[in-house]
Length: 316
Image 1 (spheres, rainbow, N blue to C red):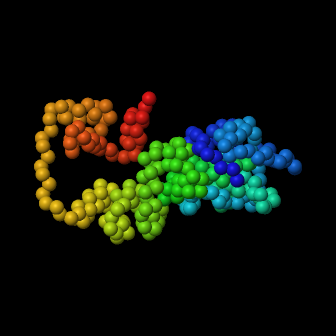
Image 2: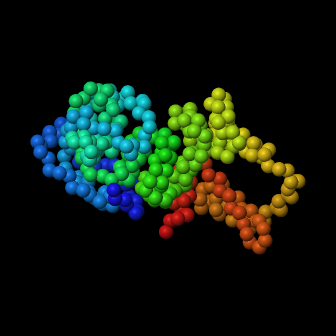
Image 3: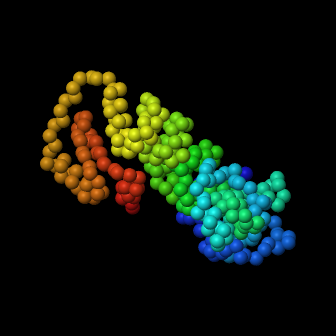
């Protein structure tokens, strides 16, 4: 199995991989020839340019398709609307598959498992497919991208997918961020959810807690206890953050009253105002230590705001 040392720009979307024309085709595609030529073996590093955009999808019996081993999604509930759509219109987008080496006439699903499951429940006998030779790392990347772009993937499944890319294919957080089209802080903060107890992770996966609530409980003495309280009392992220802050404050040893801070100079206040106007965020600048050592604090509401700040600070 070949492995790519660097990620490709797959974050631009699955349609770029399948080709726009293939995405637009429907189940009315012509049947496959009796003896199709063997698929060429493409190196993993060339995945971004080996999806021939003008090749029409084939149709295969639904029983010849198998779930993908690199599929990041663990739950396929809530597809009733998709099932009804498939019953009425059929599958309007082909399923991306790769041949299984150890099973003749059997194909592994790379992207489109929700559509395949919906087609089964809609009692379709055949489905349109696009067949490609794809390595494991590319299969995992494409699975992540399709789920992130086309349907809600739980934050825990997303984090597990990032973890697999890093552990099994030696990618860094920067590599993963470029691959899936997310910021590095988003990847890092999503991965932090895996530090929560498994019971709390399952609550996030089941939709009882949000990812923001989960992050608010990181570092607490008993996150599971706080998670149960959050569900019972319907605590918001802000309320959890306040409770977590109070718990951490109580756990710190008392070392006496801290000295009061010196009043800020007019220059410091002017710098804060300039930063706020440039970034659109509340800023606080504190002088600390000796000389000109300073601490700049920015109040950031969510990851979208953080992404905007990162873009402004790294723009060339």
